[in-house]
Length: 406
Image 1: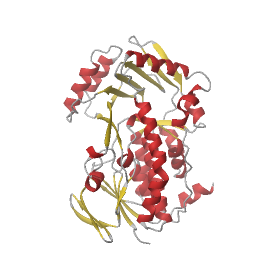
Image 2: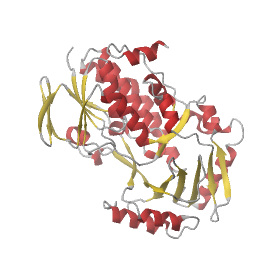
Image 3: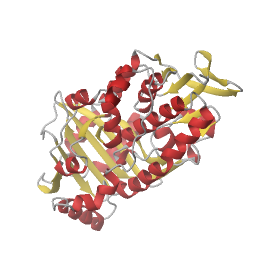
Image 4: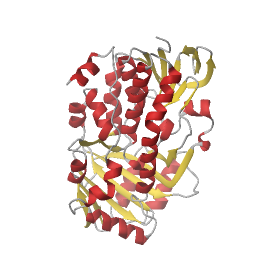
């Protein structure tokens, strides 16, 4: 087999998934992560569809359900905390055949990493700072030296270093959707509404909370920020949130007090990555590095797993012929991903409608979700995956072979 050694940048969702399936296909993966350890905190994701199917093939569903949450309701409240509208999460379980769970993104990342760890070389606290393609491989310059691999895969997210080194600056591919998003956790916050996502909306902004395990609460902010300067420091980010939410009533004063006490804040633009090609020479991109649909789309983690699975499968099928595998990878997924990106653009505005009329209409639509069949009509095409996962041969993985034989 040619092209057997593969360097993967990023230990989030796509990276560990790719490492696991590459090993199953007979490759030798190396996973490099610039952080000193796996990231914790962040935000809660809804997990369903083909990503759920891949996790099942990896033997992870029981553990995902153990650490996850089975949300009962999305509830929109007014200034005094009174319920304005909402809907039960059963509508999503119906649309997904009961294969639906919410969990912390960091928990999913940890479970995937643990599945790949024993069969993958792991390098923390390091990163790729240069790439030079050779006739028969890629020379990767790391912070502490240079190594050669047959292939390099960027699974390093929206702000991918591999993409910038190989394809050019992020500004060439990033499409801003006009929002910022922030998330943090706090311990001991009250009130707690178990398995209920509670949100308060004003024109152009939304703040929500969700009760986590261990007496923790997750807070999520979404707000419009067209053309606004993007603060890079923690103090600057907190100041922007105070300026946007400080007069919003409800529980915002207490939430902002909790924000002041945290040193871990996720803060970023809401963007998509649009590229004409996800591969170049011996370098390929997967997940958000290739096609970020945006955090508000709700499917980024699942799509990262799908792209990793398909890329690994095509490399195994092509016996390491990367040109053939890369072409099949893009051909198989591009139409599916572009459809998800279009759906995400429609969905992003539902979090924080920009006008009072838009907020009223959003709440009306949410209320209507309780009508049988309407949710399937309104969002079914965006929730249901139309793609069928390919069935690949995984010669080096007893776990994968067993999962496919059941």
